[in-house]
Structure formats: C-alpha cells, structure tokens
Length: 225
Image (tube, rainbow, N blue to C red):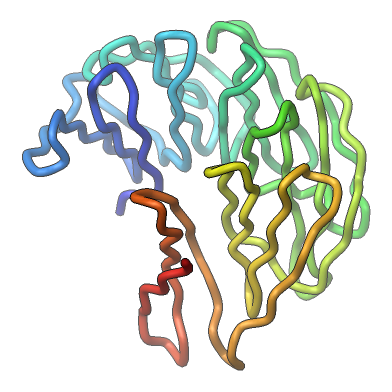
C-alpha cells in the first residue's frame, strides 16, 4: 500500500510498504530499481534529492537523486518528512531529526506532553516547520520550529491530526471531525465537519483543496474552495 507521494526533478515518486514507484507523467508508473526492504511512510524532495523515511533500522532513510536508484542509511523510525530552509526535517515518536543533505542527521528529543510529543506529521511554510503529534483520545499538540532542532508547543486541539500541508499561503491540517488552518503558523482556526466525518489526507492543486475522508466506514473525497 502506498502511503505518500511527492514531485521533484520532473518525476513523481510514491512510497509505501517495501516499494517505491515513479512516473514522469502520473499515468505510467514503474518500480524503482533498488530493492526496498522497509516500510516507508513519507517522501519529500529538496536540495536536488528525494528523501524517504520509514520504520527505522538499516534502511530507515533512503536517498536518491533520480528517484530510481536509492542509497540506504540507518535511522530511527519516522512518520513524516518535509523540506524547508535548506533542511530536511523528519518526525517520529517523541523526536525529530534534521539534515542538510539527507545523509548526516541530528536527532533531538521532543517532550512527551501527554502524548502530544508523539509526532506523526510535519510541514514547512512561512519560514516555519509545523509538526503535530498525539496518541489515543488525548487530542493533538501543534509544535513550531524555525530550525528543526528547537520545538515549542503552541496549541492543543481535541482532534487527532492525520495530515498537514502548506499550500497557497496556508497551513491546512486534516483531522478527525474538523480541519484546522493558519496563514502564519501562530493563529489557528478550527472548522467542524459533519458528525462522523474524518479527514485522513489533504492536498492542494488547481486552486482547489482536496481531502480524503471516511464516514461510517465509507471513503469520501471532499473539495474545499
């Protein structure tokens, strides 16, 4: 199952359980040439390279210039990775790691915060890295950092945040029962969804925000304009 997708250097790259697939046009896809033996959770592009992160171990971080041939590096488990301010930033359970080249990483601990430090998604925009974390029914905590090393908790929300994106001048967070947005990463607005409707992923394109959702165990696609 594929879990994340990015675009860079004229190529789409999607990652998932022991697989990486690539495409030049989004229609015809091929499997990457390197053998993948890890569960990959997230992929991004920056500084001329693709970086994918996953469940940790000897293949915890994968790095590629063309999306086809991948170098493998040991790492802690990470759920999400993004690029900004010349840095790759990856987040995971109570920690984040940052790197300028995707090879050498510096790991920092994030406070527990009643489960809010269990980081599962991260995005960059407006000069800030924004991460979200949470476990069980305790809601989620939003964190902000300018450098990927020093994190400050800025907001706790009741909902579990599954995904976030920064596009068209806004952070937009996909959550259970709501979506949350901010233009500057400091002031946030929470909009409730109809009962039982939960967002799992969000993306922006063609002046339209699209969200993947589920409602009473059925999948939905929502369009925000």
